[in-house]
Image 1 (spheres, rainbow, N blue to C red):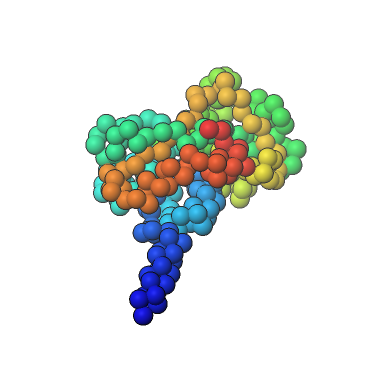
Image 2 (cartoon, rainbow, N blue to C red):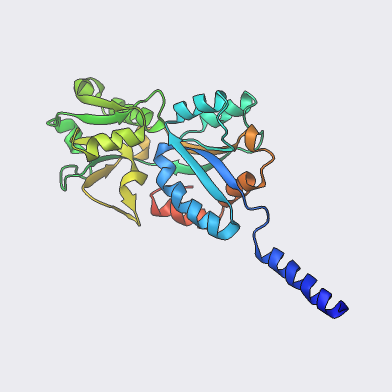
Length: 251
């Protein structure tokens, strides 16, 4: 009888060790440009830890407003480094939890093959009718696009042709649906496994805009959540790094 009970106890212990402890859900606010990579990372994260992600994406500025208004997010993956720092200073994020999880790349893209050349000459030719850009006030990739146009001396030349999306996803959709012939997008939206998935693109030189340092931070609502902390640790690991590289990000 004692031996039987011992074997049962050992079996229960082995089962517990084989199952991820306290598997939970993590509510994540993520900048629109990183939603697809995060979904890919989330699948690996779930397999490795048992935790699952509940993802809400949007423009960084909009997500900031939601967080300040009490949205139940545990982790924030921004498209810049200033917004997480601001949340930290305001007491809405856990101090010393912030780090750069990715460095984004801006691209000029058209779904039409051969339309955008490798030097972005189509901008100076200015024969297009519409140029999609994300809102520079709320979307860091939109700010990078306006900085690029300014560096190229094209701000006034294309001003009447700009169509503005609320975030980088909407800017991409303007181009993808043909409402704009071309537009500035996040490279991650058009890039996979080391190449542009369709159409033609110019990868904008980093010297034309300020670095898009995308910071992650643990929010106050997630400070006691083991799953939230596990996600932040996972973003620093090799599994996440492989996904970042596939989508054209740097670390």
